[in-house]
Image (cartoon, rainbow, N blue to C red; front, side, top):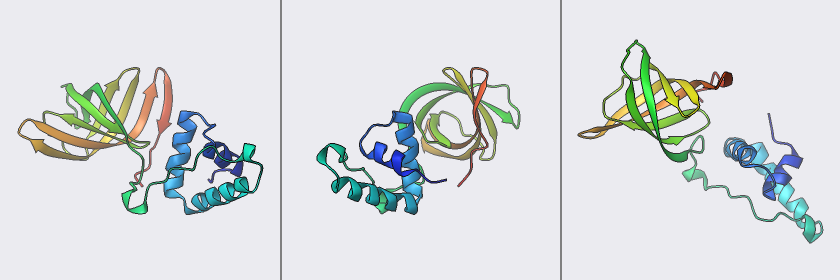
Length: 164
């Protein structure tokens, strides 16, 4: 699904909320058609009265600097439990960044890629798959995971995140 010209215009003027802006920015990184539409919106705005012109140009990173998804840095504490293969142990982790389909965190022990985990955060529970775990020092590992389901309160916020 592509972004409407109206939303692109609102985005270029900084008139969308933070979440909607984040969604559009991620989509622009992945969709050549919508990136070309941004050019059309900016060209059209430059031919209209100054009051309708965009307040600022759209910030798009250079192609070589792009990742599949934008990562948002954080430093939040959480509790992780491996549920497949099952373990009753809870492991303290520090989440270092999140994206729309994944999360990266630091921990003291190694985890097996392919394991399914449950992570308790402030106000949410996340079910995910460990994609990688690397030792980065004698006492610290860094792991990345692919989100499967996020539950906030009694509501399922997002399910079946894609791996691509």
